[in-house]
Length: 69
Image (cartoon, rainbow, N blue to C red; front, side, top):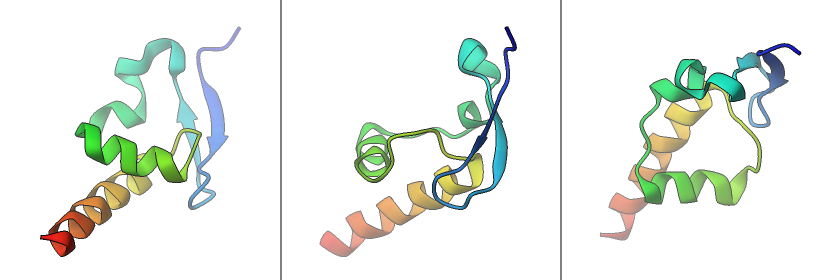
């Protein structure tokens, strides 16, 4: 069984390698999310996203929080 899974990001359709068996080495592990950011993203998407989209959505979440203040 392969440790890598090629996926398409549900937001941008870019192909990326997902490493669920080795999550610390997965591309998503480089993106630190606070719980409210995680909740914001996964209310919209129910599958893995590429690191670029995670970064974009993390910033979008913070912009939305600032707009509420």
